[in-house]
Length: 195
Image (cartoon, rainbow, N blue to C red; front, side, top):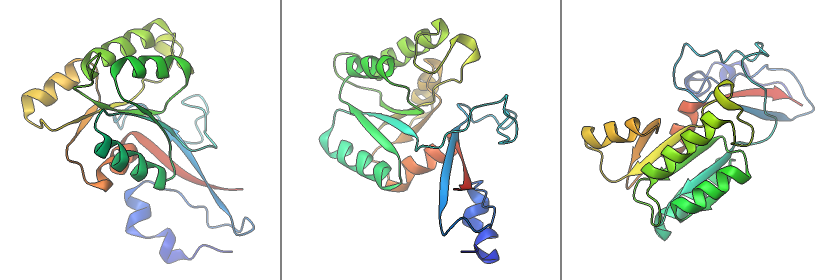
């Protein structure tokens, strides 16, 4: 199956930095996702630069930290339908346990989690990263784990507090279904490979 040139040149493909090689791979195109850990365009994300990151041939692993059952359903279903593997934590203690047990590519973190706030959990995660004790992230040489705040408070001062404690961005609640997928796309680059 040859991918038509109008698909290769579509605004969606260009807007998401998706690369399709247009070759016949037995009718299959597999999605390779690589998380940059940074929204800084100066970071190297070149798939040919093997020193900048390791390629992933599996879907991204996301952690959603959300205490509200309705928001849990919307977030988890939205992200799973987009092809991501999603785990759920309902408080800050569960978040810390999860990140020490499994390597995640991105976390959506409610700021007002019970038992331990999202702010405090983020501070602990950043300390674990610095100490090199998070799975798949070795000290200062490992990629930073993107943490996206989920909050109903979208005032600039609150956003600044999210960034101050080590979160990378925020999404307002209630969020639209596409908001979460767009945030993943902002922090994780998608490339297509045949296979």
